[in-house]
Length: 250
Image (cartoon, rainbow, N blue to C red; front, side, top):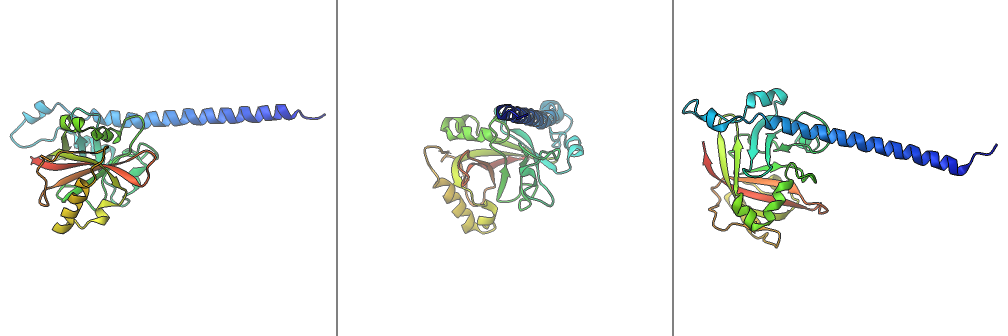
């Protein structure tokens, strides 16, 4: 008895369809679980006013003790008030690329985490601290940085706050530009004042129709910079950078 080729093909296509559907469901559930991680940790932000009333000394509004039970690599928190960017910051002690594809709970895959590399001190004392995050299609992580292509948006949401267990750093955003994908910390010797100026010049020289620059901000080689770096969809050789300068520390 001959087997019907069409029936065999139909069975194969059905099996493939079921496999694809199963894979899609697994991906969606997996992604949802990873996104829930960040929603869960955001609840560790306590009432700021109540916390600060407890004494004259600075008390972080972030419960770092609880966060570090989840992951000892969490050492800071980044917030851009008025936007969706409100995340813990991690740094791996032995693999700079680990959090590119691992969440703060250690789950492999996207959306990864908001992270720095070991070349940057965790007390934000470097001339330029670079923080990385994925440009996620669902609007999470650092996708929101692309809104700074609009100069008006930069004017309205120009503050970045970094919290650590013992300090709070406030930065003013002064530029959002398309930049090449060079490794910034390897490309510039920020211990050298001339190199610092070269970097600043390269930022200001990156003006395009998709950039925003606030020339009124006071920035020089003695400033402390914060660079927020994310990718650009379909442009693997370029990065989108949001640059901020330290204005206050407590």
